[in-house]
Amino acid sequence: MQNLKPIIAKNISNLRQKNNMTQSDLASRLNYSDKAVSKWERAESMPDVAVLKEIADLFSVTLDYLVTDDNERKVETKEEGSYSDNFEDANKVDNDSFSQIDEAKTTENYDAATGDDNKAESDTASTGKTKNKFIYMSSPLRKHGFITGMSIILVWLVATLAFVMSDIFTEDIYFHWLAFVYAIPASAIVWLVFNSLWFNKRRNYFIISLLMWSSLLSIVLSLLPFGKRMLLMLILGIPGQVIIYMWSSLKKKVELKE
Image (cartoon, rainbow, N blue to C red):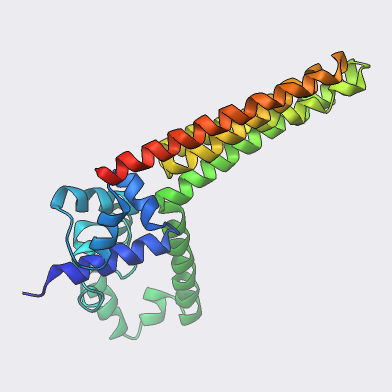
């Protein structure tokens, strides 16, 4: 029996790269260290069945896909390039249909039964485009990225609406553009929430830093008309940044020990 380690290693590496993920990203999603993922992809070790199932669900493939070599996969009855069970089910064709088509080819009424060749080629091309589109949209990472981006854009849409409304109903021009300043920490909060749910949690430290500095800037700019001394509030960001850095370093050391 062929050794499964190199096959699984190759398939995990290919799926990770196709989804634009680093080894650290994949490790974070699976709650494993990046060293463990590196060993999997070098075929030095192999994940257990539970982890393989989690990887298959993450990339929307089957367990068979992970343990099957490319050459063997080409002769399977499943269509090559299928990434999910739903997609496979959607593309199953009854064997009786093939038999009917073969019989139609042997008769003089072939054109009437199957339509002209140009139409068949057009339908095949259209089906191929639909499949490619389905595969592209079926990736969980792309879906999550799309949802995150749309949510952040919604924040800036609200900020633009606030800017327009304040410009119409108020005369104090100074505070109009602050709507866009407030949108920065609001976007950071949205990004932090979705990143904690779906993406690399190590990026949270950068997002928290952005949230802290943009919040301080929003407060300072809002209070600036009361005096330039309000700029001193930005100094609070220095110890805050040191705390975030120490927190991230401590968290990293704990993960390495594990």
